[in-house]
Length: 134
Image 1 (cartoon, one colour):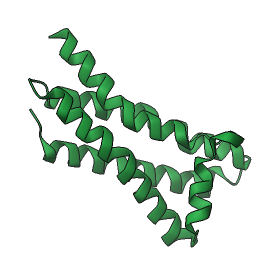
Image 2 (tube, one colour; image 1 turned 90 degrees about the vertical axis):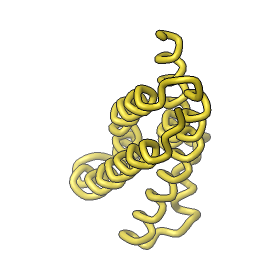
Image 3 (cartoon, helix red, strand yellow; image 1 turned 180 degrees about the vertical axis):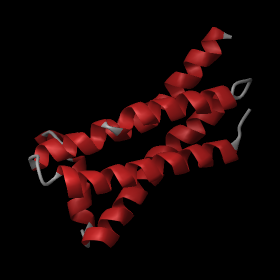
Image 4 (cartoon, one colour; image 1 turned 60 degrees about the horizontal axis):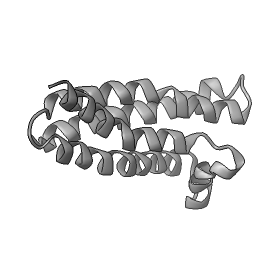
């Protein structure tokens, strides 16, 4: 069953966690680690939380339309979380769009695309796993 309110509530929890994690990484963690290590911190720490939210989403949207519900979350969560991260960087540090999109540069080893990929795939994989168990 598709439940947009559940999808939105879980996305809001993810977005708040990602923005707070970025804040901690940019302030406390950045004082002691290199820039590359901070980028890895900001990408890897939210992944278990995203997986947990995807499992909750799959449990709440179990049923005949599980794929549509997981696809809705898979399309909305990465784009809107990236938008929340961009707005955080823009408002807090006055970064431009080019600085934010530089975080997506996987060709130089940027870890941020890994978080975006997990945001996209986690709901579909969790929905498939719970549907297959049924």
